[in-house]
Length: 367
Image (cartoon, rainbow, N blue to C red):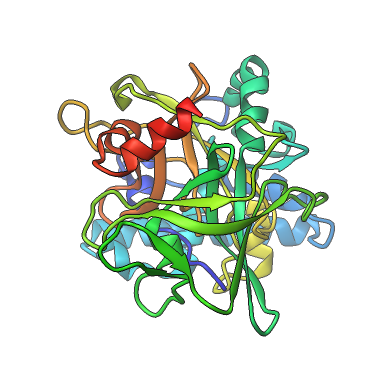
């Protein structure tokens, strides 16, 4: 089941700054300004790592992406709405964002791929070195939601993370997608619970990486909590077979106000509307686990219920945990890319305050 590229334009506006200026310097962080030659150079280096793309072809593709990104920026400046941008323009924006210090790193054996293959991301090396133990623990407790139907079709549908020995947290919309998406569960009338629909087998694969798929799979048994359709807390709890080899993650009780640099874990799928060679900028999206670095945007009010951030997230990150680097506690639950503002996540305090979900999370924490 293909998942759409999340809306990118608002993050592009904020990361690029004033579109009338070009202040990009490859070694600096953060970087701002219109896409230009330095972006093309960085994208070329990224594409050249692909065995089936020649250096000449990489250069041509990189220059095309920069040109498309500039065209998209000019359209936005001219009054075009974010949703009117094409998948090609959004992907070109993402390519620039990736090489300006917002990588989505592959996870292997719960560890991260080397940053050397991600031009413009050198800033994060110190964070990785200082917090590698926490990063690996967070990766190990986060899994892909894998679905198999009665006809044997299999696909990935979002992310979930361990909050108890037999409980994972994800988004409501992962289980009941909006629009024409296939619901995987049905609500139990008069309750906040749900049950799996007949014909669907769901598992959580905590090792859905390129080399370990299927080695840490746990069946989903039932749904002890599913937020109401009009509930702003887009969340759901799944009960799974007990996990013995990962420590559950703790949901923070602190406001996201103090959060600055952050990371998100998810399982991005391939963008079907975008050429394979353009997808190579992102290292070929294949539902395998990724960790994305980013930064919090300005907040509205005291202890807001949502966090807005600029980490690279694609379809498949829904339901993923958001962390700061100060401690191994979940700061927010990522849920979507807002076409007006940026990538959004439900704050930990909003999860804790929820009338039904909060009680279940505290019970899970107590064991």
